[in-house]
Amino acid sequence: NAGVTQTPKFQVLKTGQSMTLQCAQDMNHNSMYWYRQDPGMGLRLIYYSASEGTTDKGEVPNGYNVSRLNKREFSLRLESAAPSQTSVYFCASSSTGQETQYFGPGTRLLVL
Amino acid sequence: GENVEQHPSTLSVQEGDSAVIKCTYSDSASNYFPWYKQELGKRPQLIIDIRSNVGEKKDQRIAVTLNKTAKHFSLHITETQPEDSAVYFCAARRGGGADGLTFGKGTHLIIQP
Image (cartoon, rainbow over all chains, first blue to last red; front, top):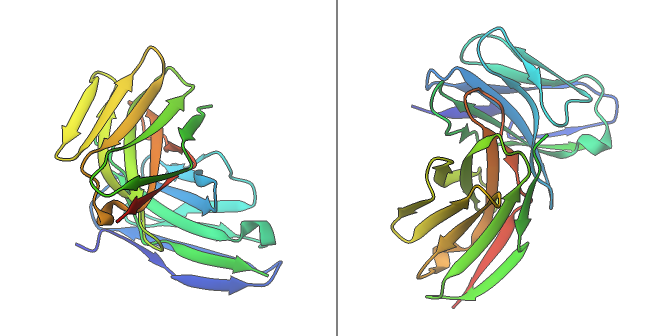
């Protein structure tokens, strides 16, 4: 089992460009999450999906959209990147009834 | 919404000594409290968690205590070793659903040889 995987590992964007961060899990988990991590700020929830077909906003959703493509995949889209979105993005998943969240390796995004 | 405060932001201890990291939370409906360890450039990894129906949980050198009345919980690491050096995050979540975690800002634990 690969667990939670994320692509790409690293990306540089110019202000205004768009991109999609991909996340997939092979643990048959129902719930998936996107967090961002900034220095000194801990991790903050962007969006989450309790189950296939549903998505909800987290603490910092502005500037992002998500798609729960199927049970395995949950993508995060930046339509018009801004320097304030420079961060490390982590995807996580958990199983219904099991509260442990398992994290992917992260995507480092630099917006110039 | 939930707010989690974590202290201290940096903690330096001598190898072999104990380390204690403290967190407070604001939402009395929170009932799940995990602790994650993150090494430089790596993903957060769960080291221990506790649910609100339990006051203390121990796993070898690591223990977590929870005081629901005061809304605070703590991580205790005994007999610290160099490999314990990392950033530790506490978090809180309401149970029963699939809500995400609310994290503290982290504690950088430094183990001095």
